[in-house]
Length: 196
Ligand code: NI
Image (cartoon, rainbow, N blue to C red):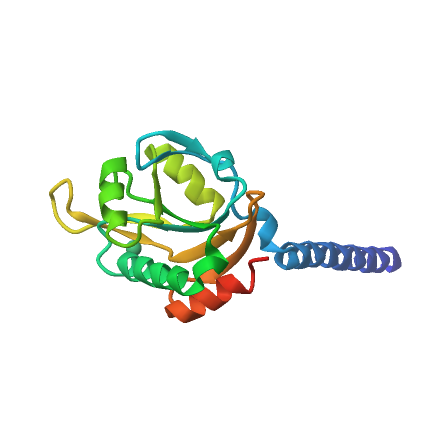
């Protein structure tokens, strides 16, 4: 009986140690800055139909947003607010390139994106790609998107998608999330305090 009791105590200690290690691992994972894990290399198509990669954007600060041109409300509001914010920043954001990456590549061809974005600001770049390329870049930026059917026709769908602005440095590394639902002057202030 004595031995069994000791074994129970030893097992109890072992279990506590395992719990401690698991707890520590969870703590480290949660507390690790997410900055290291957001963003990454991509290969996409610009509004002229040319193949571009993340390397083509090195040297510029980027403000990256994921959405789609058929979006009824959130995307147009965000694009308007970003355009206003960039106007407010003026020379301060001269070297900042706003980039709209579609999560609806079937409808957002390079030409469709060009037409759509020109209505907001001549500064806006648009990127599209194959469904696989879009899935890859969305995964890197942890962007959620999903088709939502509204009818039987091929174009009868909307896209659910996360709405976040990503500030990327000239070295191609993610710097910060900027709230996309903030008013333009707040977006401008958030960008300004992170630019050099
Ligand atoms: Ni949208």
